Amino acid sequence: MEKIDCYVVDLPAVRDFSIAGGVVTRGGGTHPRVLVRVRAGGLSGWGAATPAPTWTYETTESITSTITRYLAPALIGHPVWDLDGAVRLFDQVIRAGLTMGMPLARSALDLALHDLLGRALGLSVGHLWGQRRVGEIPLCWIASDDVAEGLEAGYRAFKVKVGLGSLEADVRRVEAVRAAAPDATLWVDANQAYTFGNALRLARALEPLGVAVLEQPLRANDPIGHAELRRRSPIPVALDESLVHPTDLASFARLGALDIAVAKVQRSGGLHLSRRLCTLAEDFGLSLIGSGLTDCDLGLAASLHLFAAFGMTFPADLNGRQFVVSRHVLGPGVDVSGGVARVPTGPGLGVEIDEDYVRGHLVT
Image 1: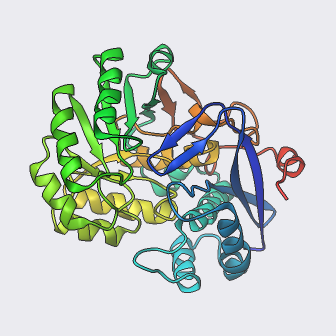
Image 2: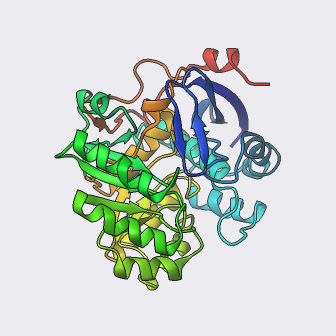
């Protein structure tokens, strides 16, 4: 690695989005992205991180300072091909607490390294890995009062965020989505909002609605509670926030605390560790489903490469297009239509960055 640059740009937000932790986007406003460019041998690779303080602790400022002051200096002079070595460098520079430290910041650099290596070899990420089981990934729509819009756009799966109010209000929200989309796949996500008792009551209330997945009902650090809930819940329990590092998955799986592992590239520090986590989930006999973090098209492309590598056919929660516009991407970006995303086939991540736009829209 010869040079690493870090930029912050604001992307236009097209609609409101809230989770149990608070507001993610406001329609008509903007939402920041931290972009990273890694350069070597006359080539560039790009990655991105999504600051998500209502979901996890990393902010725009902490991601930027972690990259520029700690991670990037450690990478200068490191071989481009050594993705595993880069992860070990990150471990040395930012030590883990309970689990991996600063995964969103690490992910931005990991994506940029994959993009650069793929471009240097003329290979897409999937070809670089020698692993792509499917060429398309079905998507799910984040549902509020706009289910009809999602159906019209071709979506046949909907994710419903709960934990924003009372348990009764959450049940009514899911009932309304089911009434509007009687044949759709439903995925319910609590983002750690519930106590054990209320989570069990919610699962039992949602069973008649044919909900396929109950995601992260309890606090991320509660394997015992999730194990007991999984034993008693009539709906399969999926974990997201609990599974930062592959070792987290190993611990929760040994305790029988989940039915389904959620793959999320940024949460797990990038593609390299996400592949390890997904392989481990398969070895444990767990189901895998894919999720994102309101990603721009760089993150969307990275997730598609990962999910395609493991043949994830359950509709993925890659909702960035629903909430933000990737103005920094040249051309159409990732091909999404009819509720289905096509896995990019170009070199690296397969997305081209408009460097003039990035330089002209920097957040200072």
